[in-house]
Image 1: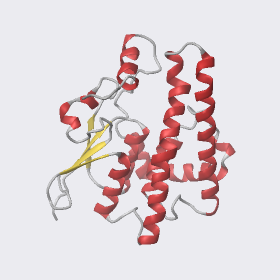
Image 2: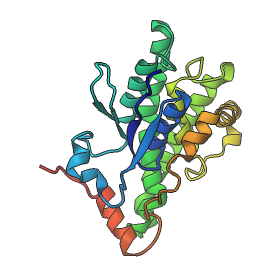
Image 3: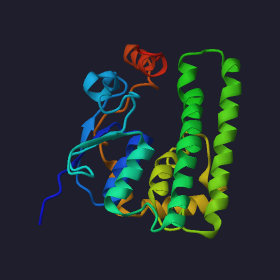
Image 4: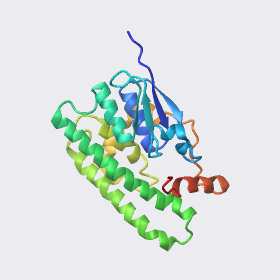
Length: 244
């Protein structure tokens, strides 16, 4: 039996990073984590930009691509779709199921992730930069309410099915790490019983638990702390412009 070569996962322990490790665990694919410390600027290193031109992690390098040659993939949604095609698992068994999976995957990519990311910024990071709470209130309220609305969308969807697209899929792998941040978003899963049931059901799966814990030994960025390190990290993450 030919041994499968591990996929390199350029990773930092964020919801987007955990999407990929959950998928790899669920698909039973070997992988190794290559840390990309986004608080120290690793995402701007030339070798990382070669595989992720948008200077965002995660990115993967599969030494055994579709033609047997190495291939790199960036953007977490594209990575999940690539892995589903590679394994023939969790991407939908036919064209109808694939459309369902891709619709809910794009819902996470275009809505849930960005909105929660913006809310996290205004709620948890921006107060360290802008001391006037009135200047932050509109952004905080806007993205809190939109996060709440999106939780409601998932709640309604899950009232008559176990998972977002019917059978468990990459759409669930994508959404779960973001929903897992509900406390830091000021949301209460008790207000969303179907979503809460889905959240707990996913967490009971060994692949989710292993994927969630992958890379947990890496230290998070010191964004919520005070001091020079936190200030530098904020400049790196929140002060980016075109780098031409």
